[in-house]
Image (cartoon, helix red, strand yellow):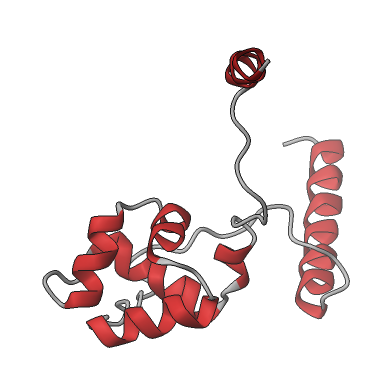
Length: 131
């Protein structure tokens, strides 16, 4: 290795050490983030939801069964069967209910006031029929 190359390497090592200290002190953001893996972290299971808990959640949001179903992107029959205890939410549904329970605004932002408008072509047909 040439003298010049050693000097450059030395400068790079010093610069790296200074950046590491600055990152550790919070004065500098890291250039890249470390990806967490299953070996390093665990994920808590979502809670189990019984019929009464789902009904309370929906009612606390002030939503009807059909509107709650649309907001969760499930069928009305699914909501009914959950609330009647005929079925229990599984997998992604349990996690989604947990998120909604922790932060109701997540779902409420998707719900807008007012009746849905018919697509433009249907409005033209309907208005022409009324004349």
